[in-house]
Each structure stands twice: as structure tokens, then as C-alpha cells.
Length: 125
Image 1 (tube, helix red, strand yellow):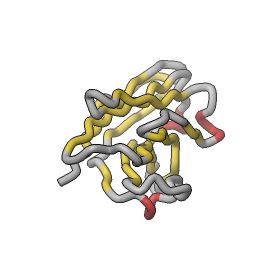
Image 2: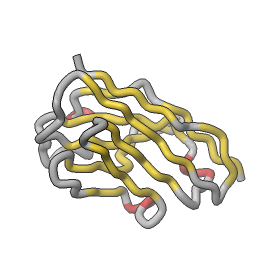
Image 3: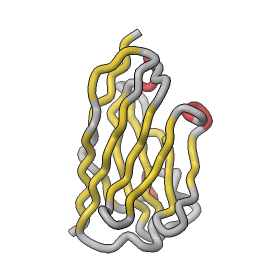
Image 4: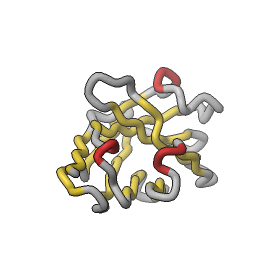
């Protein structure tokens, strides 16, 4: 059974940094694309960043490019999201997810097979 567990959220001020961690277990993730999504109150869940588990290729939504960095540790089966220069509009519940097939549609929430429980990130102005 695949499990994804996020940690690292919290309350910070605008301009601060925060690192989220997603601990994955239950199988090998070779061939997968693992990603971060977020959902603000009253809004749809949106794609933030993704990483190809084997090759380390990355992808970001435009609004976080240059501020967020996604990475993974294949040995520890752990994925990270380093967030810098945080803005109030980054406030949301952040989820990690995995597309086990590593398809080209990893940005679509419905295309991901497993989800973590989410971690709250709140950025005050």
C-alpha cells in the first residue's frame, strides 16, 4: 500500500522560506512522476511542481518559478519542496502526489494515483 506523508508546513511571514517533505513508502517509484499540488480555500487544487523520479527532470507552474525548488532522494524515498521568497498568495494546503505511470499528464490532479494528507502553509503579509 502506497503511503505519502507530508511535513514541514507552518506559519511564516512574507519573504521567508520553508521546506516541505514528502516521505513515500509501499513500493518502488521508478518510472513515476512525483509532484506537489496546493489548494487554497474556495479554489481548485492546482499543480505546483513535479519531478521525474528516475531522471530528476523538473517542472514548475509559472507563479513559483525561481522561488521554489523540487528535489528527491531516491535512497530515502523522499521528495522535498524548498520554498523561498514566500508570498501571501502561496497560502494553501500543500499535497504531495504520485503518478505511478509517469505520464505526460502529471499536472492534472485526477491523473495522480496516490495523495498525502496535506500540510498547511500560511504566509502572512
